[in-house]
Image (cartoon, rainbow, N blue to C red; front, side, top):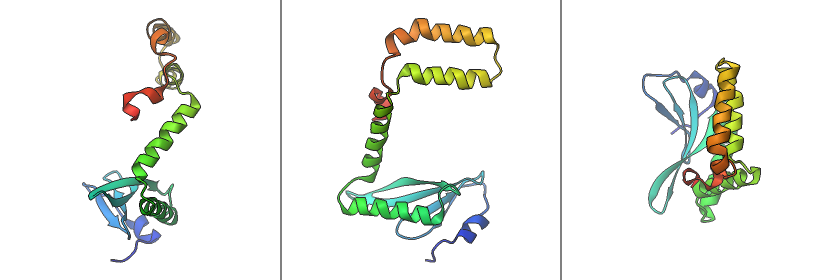
Length: 150
């Protein structure tokens, strides 16, 4: 099977269903119906086939995707589950940032509510409701302790 080239990737056009362009050693590119392109690496661990994201094209070039694939293969050779390793790194990053419910919801109010063009009174009313009803009980809780992060 021939390797992928940058020219072949750029020439790939979207269809009504996603399709794969295969490279080698488990690396492939999924071309979505909207024209989006995602790098994926397929590997087997304990007899089960798994896939792991390696980024999106063109943010991650073909050479960089191959490097990420090689890193994943080295982790497998060392007996490390790359998916579990990535999950642990993400949890450590969240814990290091001290991301709390209050910080996330404040950022949400700042970005989303103001971007929607809502009135100042509505934004202030929403902020006040969070301060009265949610922050006293949830504001200090770290997001990393959420069951969704495990």
